Length: 86
Image (cartoon, rainbow, N blue to C red; front, side, top):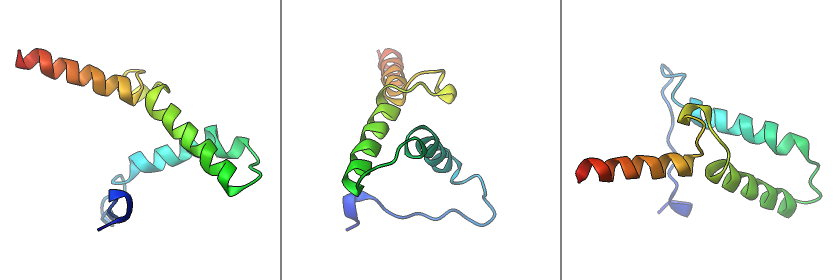
């Protein structure tokens, strides 16, 4: 069983956009968190990155999601689906 329920998946050589979403996330992580700080230890870096990921998912607006956070977007989608089912 994979660690943390994560499985490795490769993209095809003929599909250069296959990993575009994760590449964009890592760019944002580096630009908005990692490159702006000099961490004193691995533990400090790990905690700061965990905080950034929580912020990224819960609060940071995303242009592709209509300037909603991923959590807000998912909640909006869930409400829409419930409304459609009613």
